[in-house]
Image (tube, rainbow, N blue to C red):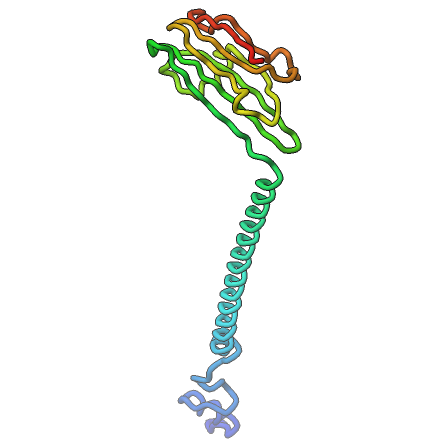
Length: 204
């Protein structure tokens, strides 16, 4: 019939005034637990476990470093003890004799070592007294006497320097074995400045 609403359209009119049918929409306020909210507790536990693992790994690494350092120190100490017992130390003596007027000095150096590869040599250098005694080893140009000596070295065989005057020195020495390199031998009659005369006396 025209002019009367069809009973089949009433549900549609009812929906216009705010009514809802079951199943039309999801209920408001229902949490969707498929995202990050559902992972809060499990994820916090996983992060806590990761921190514990990292801390444990850090402790293990620290212990490893400490143990490695201790082992290295022990090896170095053992090597030092072995070297000190198997290799004889180098014996060095340095004696300076100053001229009467204090201007020049003669420095006698003796180096010797025993063991499987023994060596021994002696030298006398003359230079200004204000210079350090180390010049006798570092500055070879000041040497007036250099020679190998017999091993084992004997204190009585070391060269002896005596000043006869302000510009004259006498060196008493003991003849040693032949030098492996004859070019190193020194037995000069004057010093590097050509101001000091040098004479020699060989022990018998």
